[in-house]
Image (cartoon, rainbow, N blue to C red; front, side):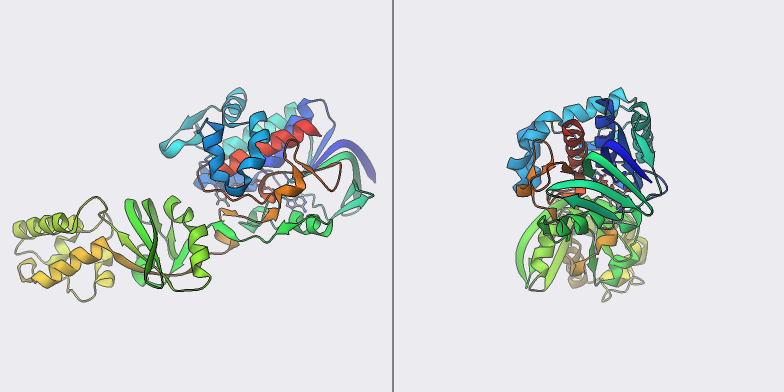
Length: 412
Ligand SMILES: Cc1cc2nc3c(=O)[nH]c(=O)nc-3n(C[C@H](O)[C@H](O)[C@H](O)COP(=O)(O)OP(=O)(O)OC[C@H]3O[C@@H](n4cnc5c(N)ncnc54)[C@H](O)[C@@H]3O)c2cc1C
């Protein structure tokens, strides 16, 4: 069976839905093919289910600084559809956005599933034909043009094709790298993906013991072979394998580089705005008012919130059953030093299965970023995570999907 369309979009994630809807709104006959049973699986888990849908930095020059080497390439696409446009687009769809700390914007309901809902309606309103549970197995080309896509026994032809199959992070959502393989086979230069926004695995069992706890104001300093490299301050999430949270995710790219050829360690300062002297005075005060208690009964007041139970593992040399008045000056100083520099050994980056973003993908020199059209195939457009663009967490990835999706949908 063969069917012909103006536009075929492969992949029903953020960028695929956007491009299909925009092309449909222009009156194009559009088919969206998605291999999962439903659209937007990765969108649904974005931002921990709340969906950090964009970053509210409205100055495009400032915003684009976050996209590394891609900055220059992205001006023309962001001038067609930028952050302001994302705000009004979702507002028009009945899902206004709210801005929270660090410029991160969320749907006002804070539900990623609502983003999928309004995007699905957008597709329907613009008469996009959606076929889920339909896996594209092959892209057929001839003389610099894409001719058709093959899905099992069916072949679909179109005038233009948008590939929006995503990258390789969290493959259970459907992003299994199919697009990378096709585009490479078609002659595109595809950079090898590496997880960039990804949690870190660490050796220390006290970290694993704190799994599920998060601490909002910590300073972490990374060292390579004992030499200080860089520090960041913010929220850290402890997990059963190591460390996560925005601060860690955004350090992972640089930590990955350090891990190439050396031992990477870190220290966490759990009182970044308190000097050692002030922290010691605070502990002395607590000890003075609780002289006859066991140390374990005052740890809640000394340790960062929720971490007292891990004290045994963090400083095994001090017995928590000791009476406070028997804690020696040296032990007190050890406590202060440790709280100001909790020692961590980084054993690696977690894999693609836990990565929020992996870089890699088609290099931007092979894309006309005014249209998102491939420079090798005149009717092939490429969007979203398929593009080799590094960026931090904070809404920048989804904004890239809305922008590239809009530009491709407007250009087909
Ligand atoms: C845990 C997590 C949290 C995140 N949180 C945020 C956040 O809060 N803010 C933010 O900006 N970014 C976030 N991101 C990143 C963001 O979700 C992605 O950048 C974005 O969803 C990528 O969209 P996409 O359209 O490029 O591809 P995807 O969403 O990966 O969609 C690709 C689609 O193509 C389909 N597909 C693949 N192969 C085929 C095939 N052969 N045939 C048919 N269909 C196929 C897949 O099933 C999938 O549905 C997060 C990512 C993860 C993993």
